[in-house]
Length: 346
Image 1 (cartoon, rainbow, N blue to C red):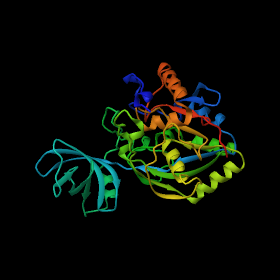
Image 2: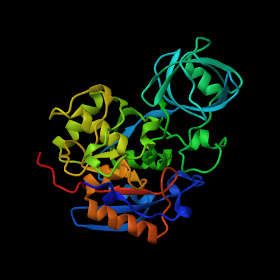
Image 3: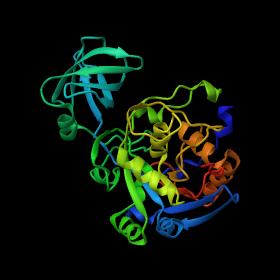
Image 4: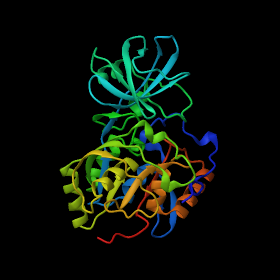
């Protein structure tokens, strides 16, 4: 597969820079790969697209204020983007600087956090401090890690809006954006209809924004992220399939979590890392439908969606979304893929 097969031209003004006033006010492109069709809806109409007995699977990760600014002991300015908090004293991070700090270099972040760069791990850096737990320091001094395509500094409103209403487990450095459209009213109406729900956790890493390098998609190595698929989620999924209903992944992170947990052929609880790269030709084992946002061209997320719905239909859907002036990326509109491209063989 060539990376060019997952490319498209997006007018810059369609990149959503701020969230809408109301979460559920977004638009939704309804896509049905089995009938090869799509239609324009409002997100509130998702209630009509989900049946009683269907199961929504949410990612309950919580975004941490993962961006820090500061300088090296030499005076050079740096920007730190947390990849993962390893323990109270240690974190793994990306560092942007005119010259990368060497092992043993002291850093002062936000004028308050003194830490030492211990060593490099590939393109990432290990930072260590013993003043207070890193999560506490990040909550006090960190900035909301808005994606690189949002061309502004973070605002107070982002602390709440770049977070799902059901976020509960701190650890992500990017939001599972498909869930940003849900508010308490929509969730309540879905419950009232008889739609079931369960949660998994995938702490989204900064690697989610890394481009696919090289034109050969098959040679790309996926970044690893922490995943927790509990027994309760597995039981809910098995019960849903047993009664003939759909398992609906709210976002690509849920898709990767569930399919990783079924990597050995049968869905089992999973607590560990996943580096699953879902691309066309992948045989889906768990998920029957999915809600997702519109993703960057030439990205692993767009490749995943294309594997699920079919590349030709996704290309048509994205062209339609651009023509109809949908809002793209994290703070943008949604796409609901009502069925996978191939019927289940369960």
